[in-house]
Length: 268
Image (cartoon, rainbow, N blue to C red; front, side, top):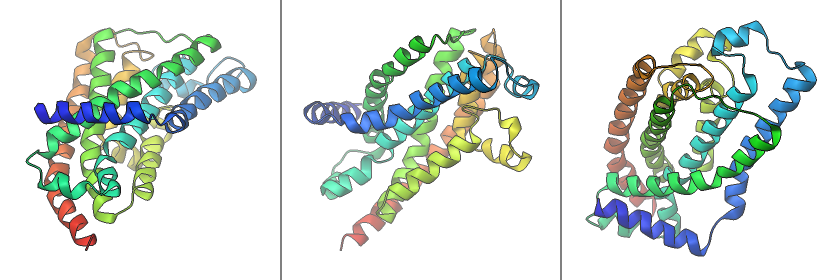
């Protein structure tokens, strides 16, 4: 716990002195644009209605609310990966990775502290999306507050689990952009954030089920636009997300020592 707290506090002090405004805006703006374009398309092209297959695949006809939830969840996922998965390679670029590797701190609390700060800072940044949604007059119904909160927690845990292995891959390869952008594209296409996965080919839908963020996103949609009224309806998908997250986290933390050794070898 002390390691996690110290990491979060150090990151706060660093960020407070040199807050990356352009970095934050560049991450949040795509969600605002996606919501704005969906609004224009819904009214200018769709005539304020959606096709039957959308309702069948998503469980709702509230297209704009569905896009708001999905776009926000996706960009939040992107933001957390940009913070959490790049924690180690940032240390590598700053020349402090060696000091971190010989420190007695374990990797799990270090990454947890970094992610805790990332969650809090991202929540503050994403309040700007609320202004956009309010200006457009879009309302998002919430049928299960508990489900929404647990779905958000499941998404954070899922991204944290993915970031552990992705962060190791980054320091081992010595690059971040190709790795992270590949993950962003895959998650955005198959994760069911802004359109139903029923639109995808069946093999792709099966692949999507192997990602912990997919089930977490389903919970977020079901507890809002999907109209799930009770927590018991959401528990199966929460369990799937939790189990997959645990598996990814174990694999990621198991791989990290090898990635760190590879990073040290590359530095000589």
